[in-house]
Structures are given as structure tokens and as C-alpha cells.
Length: 177
Image: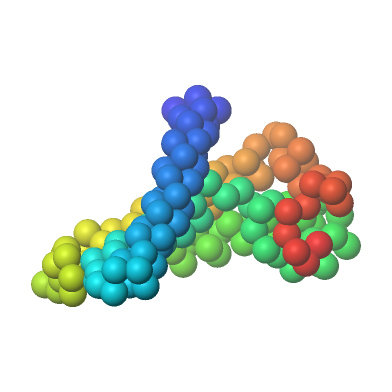
């Protein structure tokens, strides 16, 4: 199967994940307001609200990192990358994608084992199983592996030079520059 035929599906999945993450942040905000109202106006704090806020934050963080953010939106320290030529950037990219992909693949059985081990434990207020709560970490883990494979594949393709070009300063999204 050609990578170019799969890419639109991942792009659409990323768009859905972006909407879901935004909805989770709205949910966090609304539940925070409910919590403040319950605690300070009605003097009746509700424990389940804090638990749902924590879970929404956890899920939105891992889903956004795995499915929404692109490489150029990551905070990076790119001094060496900026000084390197296109061929050196390709080598750096291939090494980075390989290293991250291999390390995440090697750690996957341990991560899977730990998350599935958590079925024994439950959250305090709502008594949700922790394996379901932390399954977002498995989605994140898989997302990192798929993105590493995709990056490696792209840098091995004939159009690799298009992916190691300088990004104009006004398009850089990270704080380090």
C-alpha cells in the first residue's frame, strides 16, 4: 500500500482528534466553573468533577500530542539543525526517527503490560477502571510509532529534500526559535 494513499486518512483522523481535544478543553472549562460554583456558592464540593477534569486533561494531552501536533509545532532546540545542510538534516532526521521509533517499539510490550495491569484499580470517586483511564497512553504510544515510521519513510523517499528545508522564521511555532 502506498503511503500517499494512507496519508489523507491520517490527516482526517488528526482533524477529528483536534475537534475532540478542543471539546475536551471546553468540557474542562465548564466542569471547572461547575466545581467553583458548587464549592464556593453552594458550599457543597463535588469530588467527581475534579476526577473528570483530571481525566479530560490527561486524554486531551495525549490525544493532542499523538494525533494533532506536527513536528514543527513541537518545542525544539534546533541550533545544529539550523547549521546543517540538507544531506546532514536528512541523516539527523533518519537517525531521530529510527531511534524514537525503535525505542518506543521496544518499550511497547512493557507499556501494554502496565496499562492492562491497571484493570485491578479504580478511580476514587467514579470508580472507573484505571486501564480505561490510561488507555490514552496506548493511543499516544502508537501515534509516536506511526509518526516515526512516516518520518523515516518520507526521508527515504525521492522527495526527501522538500522535508528538510528551512522553515521561515514567521512560521516557526516553537519558543526557542
